[in-house]
Image (tube, rainbow over all chains, first blue to last red; front, side):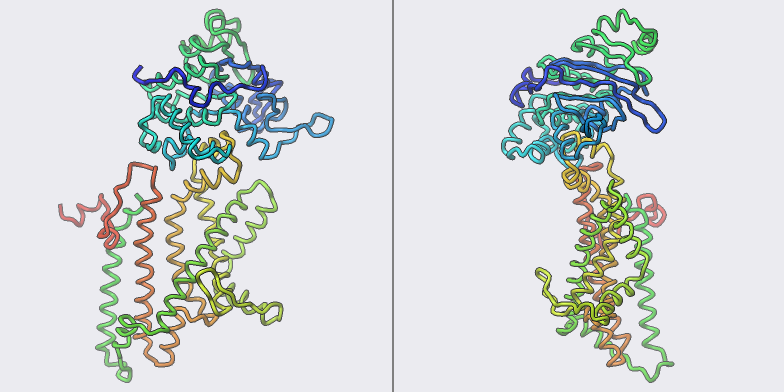
Length: 275
Length: 299
């Protein structure tokens, strides 16, 4: 691997962010409709501290929608999602257990604990790599400029982009942009990292450098949910693989179990197409 | 590049404009029908080369009112655009009504109505006050400027809204996922990117604003046009004074055009291949459309 990923990646943000609860993600009976389309049907998933969970499934299976619900980029119609002990996006109104959308301020607070990496990177194009990283720590967490810059530089260094701090996103390759995006999310010291197909928009030769960073994160104990079809990555670092189809969790298990002896027909069919 | 498209057309139009003006002046001078009219072109030259205090004052008022009204318009436009896109329906209602009214009625009607009607009806007497560095001694200037700004805000609202809609939704998702609230997302991420889309039409709006200040004629504000009109009607030297008047407006709009080109280059930062900028020559003469060079360029 040409990219030099440091072995103490999380050292740049002062060590592994420690979630407050053992179960970092606790989603129970989540239902979501897009109009008449029932895209998530009673989805439940628990992710423990320092676990890496890879979500696979055919396109349209609801896996991306599901992780977007975890930081309330999507609304849900029923169910509960707890991340790091906090009910995400809603508060219970009265004793009836009816859910009401939470105040913007509270949702913003909840999102600070959840890092997200997008398929299309979504770096801020009018800011340099370093500015992208220090923006949220300064604006949202109220960090001092010097402190934020020091941390931003350390992060860039450890994802192998120390020389690129003054580059704008359009001057970086896709793989470099995605590594900056990962650094940007890490700068908020999140308890959980969500990856939404982080390598599917990349040219094949750049996939490795991004996966390398993600593997290092997983090894250092970051709690992660990764929507991806990178089987090598799943085999190497995933604690569990979750197979989704048509809005339901079809089955889950260790990478070995799921890839070698899938119990469900739908999993077998899907794996036969991608392996 | 939007700038290069049609810039050949602009060059042709400029050339045609100069020629037309020349023909007009020559024929006017040599006409024998208007034997009773004496052209005194030195009035024009004097009004251009050594303008008196009244003209300078008019020029200054035109510039000051244009800038203040445009700034007000931009601020109101941003709020109206956000209001129009708000999740909260009363905000949408107010924004829509504001835009509907001020875009749907003539500026001169708004100026005369809002300035005179409340005073005639003894509801208010407009006070006189200064506005930052611009101390306007006359309530007509202050209120006129205010109304022009409010009117401009309605137009800017649509421009700002288009700019915001042009920003990739992934940008505000990324900002939100980092814990930014609505205000931070808008001011730090979305609006700076929308600016790239907003700046070119904003430049055109300001160009219009410079010329539209002449409507303050209706409130007897002695900006450029009212000043020259006053000279023209008292001396009957219409051509002479209005040619000079045109010169001053053209000077202002031309300078603004150069400034605008510079701003646009600056705001394209971080998008597309790094721009090398445009030369002063290109700014003055326009840039030939690369596809059309062979047509006129002869190679």
